[in-house]
Length: 142
Image (spheres, helix red, strand yellow):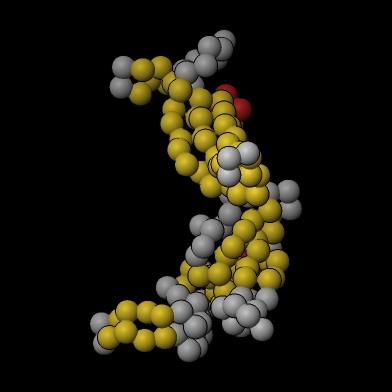
């Protein structure tokens, strides 16, 4: 998994027509990603640069919701902690407890994740009535 740190349009010479952004020609999207589990010497994470040409007519798949979101699934509420590109599996952590005994990791297909929730069970929240802790949801995410 990785974190996108920047993206920009650029021009790479080719035989295909290009777009104009302001006064500049562009035909490619360049994305810079820092890989989460690839630590180099000096405690730096490895970087990967992706280039997606406009003429390719596709964009790589992406997670249904942003990583770190609290989500409602078919089996309850949890936190989206990862996403596998190769089989489109979303990794949900702590459906029942935030950490420690009783916490869990579950792997869900895209259609088993219903919506983003404001906070997961056990999280501290600020509301118009004051601060508190989420203890449960009624019809959460449906």
